[in-house]
Length: 318
Image 1 (tube, rainbow, N blue to C red):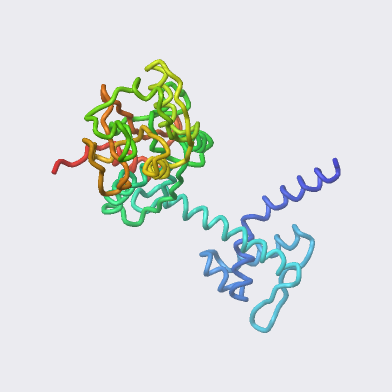
Image 2: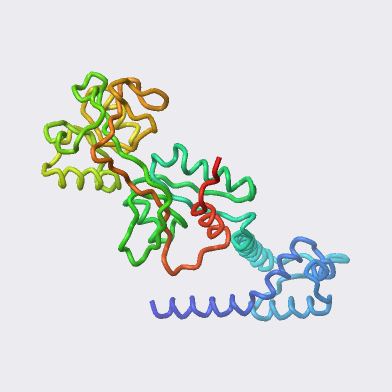
């Protein structure tokens, strides 16, 4: 084991010594000529020749041999040139990525958000941002609040749109963006469907359909029921609000969900809400705060900073 570690260490030191000349070897493999390779790299031809000779001495094997007016690689040269080409391609890709990240006009944003926010908030922000920065790329990740914040802490995600905000977490910074009203969704034939409002305490005997643990809305509803003095009777648990609405429409229970902007007064809602669902405002009204979070203390790339500033900017007035 010790011998293997020593051999690996020696290989690493030799690779570090050879690195400056590997681009030359790759260029020779591409052009078949020292002079053209030197011109490609912007170095004098004598310098290129000396580097190739030193590289051969370092590895202990000839790398090139004369071939007419040019040169050709030996078997050892082809092996090393192939490795050099792969390494240089990887480095070049990294350089392109760094340049993109440094340019807010053509960078990459890894964005996480709750499923429901993918209906309008996130698409709207991306659309308006790309009007000014059309070359910016986005990687979009959806999931529960718990999963999104975990990805943020681990560095897999740059920004996360969540509700409620992760206040009190020293590893994260956050900013509120908007408040969203929560309402009671009931089947069309439910006894509460004709009400203009309903108190949380009135749900004590109702079978509720909720999101699973780990979702921010689940925590809010659990806290609301606890404050009203009862433990909810859970009929079903799901992972998406639209699925929960569908179960409500099927008459399988009631649910507290974000308002679609069409609170009901005993009549079924329309638009994106299933026709068998009625939305009833809670009394007193209940809201959840939607915000954006990022890692505290970590430098944001310019493009991520630009999108964060865009998200935090006040919405334009009509």
